[in-house]
Image (cartoon, rainbow, N blue to C red):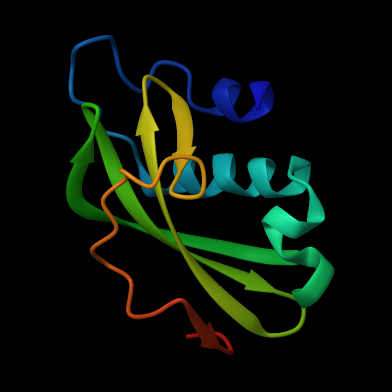
Length: 113
């Protein structure tokens, strides 16, 4: 998780709403998924993560921006996750169900979009 936090240092200060770029979130989520257990990252079912694409939802969580991210796997499966950046830390909806997740079209999509 330190690697993910290092990618985002300086993104927001305490008490201020962040203005995190989607590219920073994509990089941090990629690092997170590479370090996560296989059952969390779904590599045990869908193969390695090949790409992550995120877009800001307009929602906020603990003064951080919320992003809807699509995680593409080697099996051509795409899975949607909601994540937030709070004080340069990545928070996934898997870790805290309070992260608002309004951009999901469903739990999973098949193939690259």
